[in-house]
Length: 108
Image 1 (cartoon, rainbow, N blue to C red):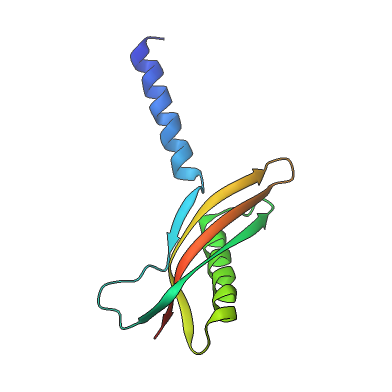
Image 2: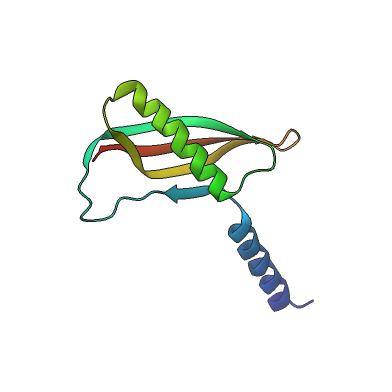
């Protein structure tokens, strides 16, 4: 194979891996003009076990863990928005992966 074909295969492989991997994500972003009061920021670590590491599952778990942490500090009608998460350490043998999520605590 010539160098162009090798480079093309490398780029294609990198693109495929980036499209199907769940290394980072964002969820429930705040949009301009939303009428919310930002109370503060919150962060948490959580573990996802098994082969259910799809973005929808990770987004949901990040939201529920952040909301639980926020409810320890804030009271009233609160929600968590502008959620970002990143994968941390993983145990591929047991299929366990730790994630860290951050978000903004808001009151509507």
